[in-house]
Length: 127
Image 1 (cartoon, rainbow, N blue to C red):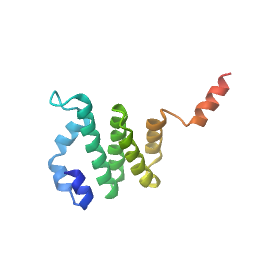
Image 2: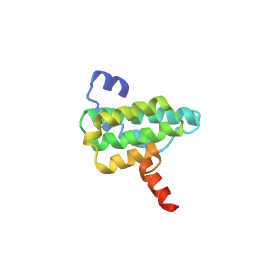
Image 3: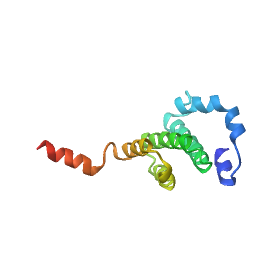
Image 4: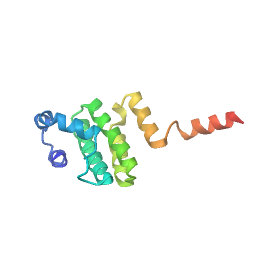
C-alpha cells in the first residue's frame, strides 16, 4: 500500500493514523511464527523504507530519517545490499536537511563507527 502511495503521491496521513498501533508493533516486533525470520525482517525493512520515503518527500524529516535508519539496520541484519544501497541513495538525496545527530547515526550504521581516517589515526596513536 505504501509503495503505491509513494509511486502515485497519495496522501496517506489518515490511513497511517488509523494504523498507527499496527505500524508501531511492526517497528518493534517481528511477525511471530507466520514467516521465517529473514522474510519477516525483509517485510519490516520494506515498510520502514516506504514510510521513510513518504515522510521525507512530505518534508517531515524527523519521522522520515527515523524510519530510514531503522530500515538500514534491518537490511544490514539480513544482508540485503541492494536495498541498503536504496537507503543510501535516499539518505543522500536528503542529507542536507539531516541533523548532525542523524548523520552521525547514519555514518555509524554504514561504517560501524567513526570514519576510516578517525580509526586509523586512533590506531596509529596507540603505537
